[in-house]
Structures are given as C-alpha cells and as structure tokens.
Length: 242
Image 1 (cartoon, one colour):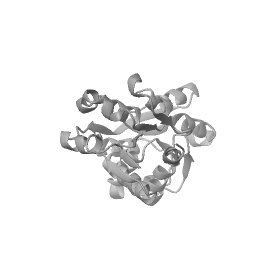
Image 2: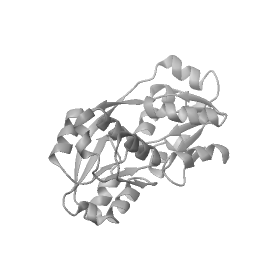
Image 3: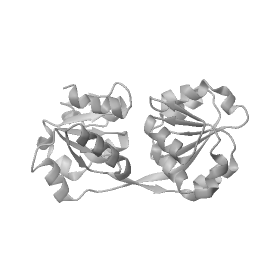
Image 4: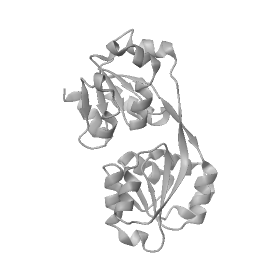
C-alpha cells in the first residue's frame, strides 16, 4: 500500500522504517516541527523534586539537550505514555519508569495507582503546545496534584504544492496516518486538500483515537478507521485489517 505519514520528522522516520519493513511504500509529510524550550525545562527540574510525567517522546528529547544538568534528576519516577517514549527515557538514563499503553487518561489512572510517587511533591507534567486536554482533566478529576510546564511547542509546516500533488494527485494514496487531533486539523485545513476533496475519495484515514477521527470533515469520513487503543502497533495493524 501507498501510505502517507503525517508525524513530525524525527518520529516519522521511525514509522517510515516500520512501514517499509511491512512492505508498504511509505511517504513522509510532516505538518509540524518541534521548537524546544530548554530553559523552561531546566528551571522546571530545578524547582521541583517529585515524579515527572510526559505524554510525548518530544519532551524526552528536550531533556536530552540538558546534558550534565539532567544527571541529578534521572532517579526521579517517570510516568510515560507508550513504549517508544519509555525507550527514549531509558536510553537517556532514567531508571524508574512506569508505562501506560493508552493515552493521557490511562496515564492518569496509572499515576493514581502509585500514590507514594506524589506523597511529597506535586507531579511535574512536561508538556507540549498544543496538546490534548485529557491527561490534565483526568488528573484534576482524580484530585492528583500536578504542575504543568510547556517545554516545547509544535510549529506548523506548510507543505509545498508540488509535494502534495506528487503524494495525492500523481498517484493514489491508499492510506494516511493521523496521530493527533492537531495534525488532522492542519491537514484538512490545507488549501490543496480543501480544493481537491475528490482525490481522497478512496483514501483510508487511519486515526489513533476517536478524537482525531472527529477532526475529519464529515464529507471525507467515508473510509475512516480508528485504532482500538492509542498505540502505533494498533494503528499500523489497521493496514492489514481491511
């Protein structure tokens, strides 16, 4: 299958390799790029001493830029969404990592099952902007103390018109992978997409969650599939479940 990946460049490269190993023709179309706020992350670590949470591997990449300033924090408990984020944290040197295989809501539930981690200090949530509200909303519902610090933001990328024509007009794209609600909104707001809806009549839009699928315009929801868990393994499994 011809599959377009809309992830940012760094994480998208890993997905491209996986798709190629599965025998697909994989194309990278990043719609945003991270801008790191390194000083904010450094200050957040210095001002806190308890557990850390992150719902994105990008936050771990911000921490990786701190160098020796990170060493004294590597023994702090770290709660992370997904195996990929946990692996990057392990490679960086964190030693006490708990993994949620779901999304932000599931991560909050995991943290609530470890009350000792929050006994002496609020949770430090290293977040990006924009982000889904589910994790912080669930922490609030569970009355778990936390402090959010935005350590990166995603800056929009506008793909060149010739790239969009090559990906979607010169040959049919069988599937497009959507990993976040913000990415879906970026894609469907592209003038090229809005002006050429017929090009996507047979394209499968594979979404990591229902919230992402809801960002697809109703007229283009003819071929939408949603992973049964917000996990890339489940998302890619949709490619063989047609």
